[in-house]
Length: 256
Image (cartoon, rainbow, N blue to C red; front, side, top):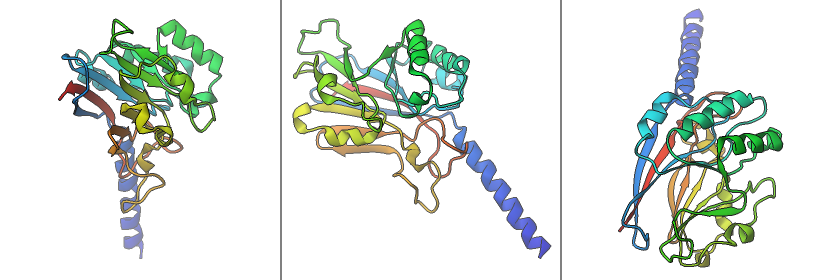
């Protein structure tokens, strides 16, 4: 009997260690997307990271994407309750080494006083997209413009598509970022969004036999729109993962 208990104990310990390692991965997944209507001859490369929560971004992540990235996008849940501002600041400093940084709010970001977080963003020069857009082109009146559109967190009832699209040219190439992937249900073909980036679900975080509270993260296609729901970099609750390893993304957009 004791033998079997010892075997069971060793199995559980090994499983927990494995799950902890899965949660601490520092992986950058590289993808190349081509679009016939992408207006630039020069590719656009985005480093996308979401759901950092309590983690400190590892230097190896920065080394993998530095010099290869045009913009960095934080897809929400940069932090959560109890995360020191000093750690958040260090993470932002690390990401700023890579490229200009854009941020959209996630539900857990609201667990930190928004005034403190907003002040930190201002001090660090972070571009916050809160139901707003940013033209990546030099000439905002040019039909070859590329727009980055960010919406506030859906679960808090703060998202507003009308405000987010207000300054966006109809002919522009559109990239939309929402922490919660459910916002894609608010989009129509008329919105003409080419790329949708999100996180929030952690891919279920802990999945047994392929089952979890959420679908595993990855790429999907919704009409003509490419959709990414990332597993994210950090964790909620316990610092463990199973069947949904931690990940970040290096996305290159090219003309087809």
